[in-house]
Image 1: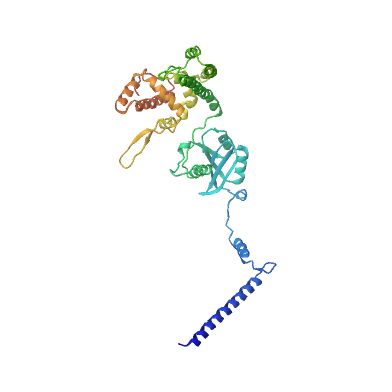
Image 2: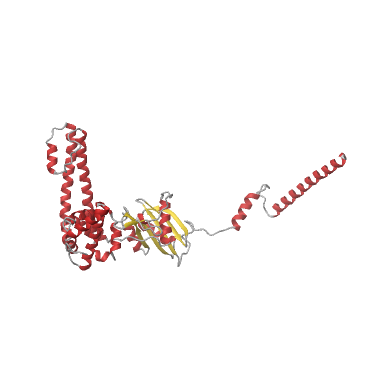
Length: 414
């Protein structure tokens, strides 16, 4: 073995490596200095300069809160989904299938509308939000400002089973589905119609409060053994007088006395509301006469139906749209050649549906045709499904009365 030759080769390789390193270092230093890539202290600042050069070479247009006000949307269509809360509005805006703005702003209608027009200058703006506690004031302000807004039923918004619920996600789903035409607006009542509904809806609230007070009275009596579990006496003035005559402990007598005063006060308010409803019925005598001619529909039911539904010949273009509004349309789960229709979808007005079911139970004792229909369906499908079918038939007949401008005819086959 030639050890001397091996050592000389290794030393030569080591020298070449060191020399090449020195040369490359000198060249790198010369290039940076000549290109101005050294800072004032003579230190290398390659990373900072590289980052600056990268920013200058790659400038992609972005739409954000600062630049969107300067963006011109002339001829474009912008779709805005708004998640409405008491103090804030969270919205997501889509244009050409992409999100162009998303933010949460104070719930000030005027400021929000003015800002939207600045953000989407020159665009045709479409918007939507869910029906709820806020009513239709925002809708009317948006429409008055030239923005095409719809109010949607929350149950009609498509959601995934794995979706988490946040304000941003809700507004995003509304904006996205609005942009592709998958949302349909509900009927928007006039201000006068909204005000008329306040009477019957306030009565409904007072009834709930009075029932709650009555339940509390019985609960306390049962708690201390003054009534038994089978006591199902209806709460009335006569029952309250019997409770007042009981020999109750001082503390229990005081607590129940307060609840009795509350029950009586609510009863007085309900009497006042009843007088107001009577006066309202005189102003709406035409619709009132048709509703009250229906078997099973009394003074209160007629007023609720008149305020909630109005003239059925003008508002609903066909029976199916009416059935969908009151939630009496059967759900469907069909596949292939199999067609399966289940329970009602319950997506309509629960208030109207409840009144119609109550009226249907009373009507079968008056109208023989409805009774025969009820018994025929109940024999195979059960009484619950049968009474829903009667309620559906009843509201369909009421619409026919409005279409023909005639009162209900008992016993008529349709």
